[in-house]
Image (cartoon, rainbow, N blue to C red; front, side, top):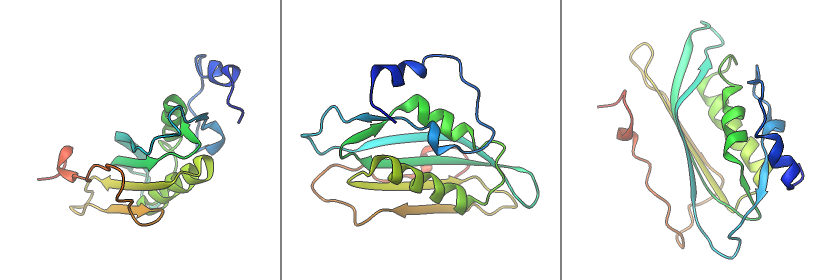
Length: 153
């Protein structure tokens, strides 16, 4: 998608929440601080999808960290993209890794990591972690602390 004021202006209008994950809804913006190496953290404490076997809702706390290169993601488009999973039937692993893959394809970041802390159903929490390559050491990247949200002791 082009990085223009017109593209961003579209996001200010009423939008329909997608009925499935739509990577095309994601908008990338030119990184305003390309000369600096820094980490962006996007957190979604109320991520929802549907179990493809039972049709029951699954809930997760998602944490996505990335070191941008040329682009950053526009946050409202990211929010709408995540809403597309609300009625989407997929396993925890599929949801978590698909989000990472879509962000990698869109942004081509220097580094990306995702953590999906899935709330227990049947007494078993399932947590999914993935990163694009070794964690860089020359930039501050916060630790992942699963105790930052409800559902864990």
